[in-house]
Image (cartoon, rainbow, N blue to C red; front, side, top):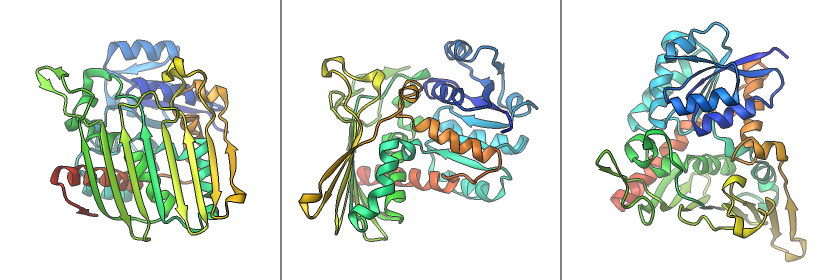
Length: 362
């Protein structure tokens, strides 16, 4: 296969995870980076010796050696950077979630989808976690068609980011956009349908209550429920708590239909695992047909090398395998700009529903 040179916009915590996973691909390397923070630049230079640093997005995009771009900058910068890239050069792009933080971006995203001449993949890596990928592959056969889908995430609080941008709705898009667009993407993927209505309740309950940055109090939420109706007739619910870091499993996803139930259990990232809990449990599926005699448990392990490369159970690597094929012209993106936007729109509607205390149509 052709050797590929990647350019990165941003190389903070998630950007460094992308670097480690690109290094695991055959004939691929991160060649150039734009990163304004000195500490993150130093970390990236240690991770990828010899990498070039550009002072501007234009310098990176116009670097003749670059074959593709990965956008891992703060959320509120994504659309702004897509606009600038489009004005300079057309390159394949992998853009981190959430795609947008502003409802007004819909018109641009729709136009960009149809006018940008290179492929764009939105980084919804939860699709590619091995236990979730197995769940998605089996869900219709086990359930006979999903009628109810519940996604529960009980986890640790938001991590510290450069300039604390993730402590504010203004920059992150809000917790139901920043953190939960992954789960709304899964709802659409698993039900193979679109949401028609949401009713949500979220709040800042425990975390960040007394945190101030440059005199401004953090307003990011740490808990929520969000319930969706889908045009297939399915009912879907998200339950989020970000002050539950002692949980054995960070994610629990269950789908129920006329034939039975399938559940997926995924522990939190290894490097954040509480030591007093011992070793993390194995990710696994539980299959429960309506006839209980057929109940079974399927363990879905993850390669230790992939676990060491990031915090998402190998999903970033598998996502990059697909994106590599896209850059080489061997397949189309599996997560389009419109997929990314629709997941964000669900999060925005859920935030608005919670604020209004009313159901919001989609």
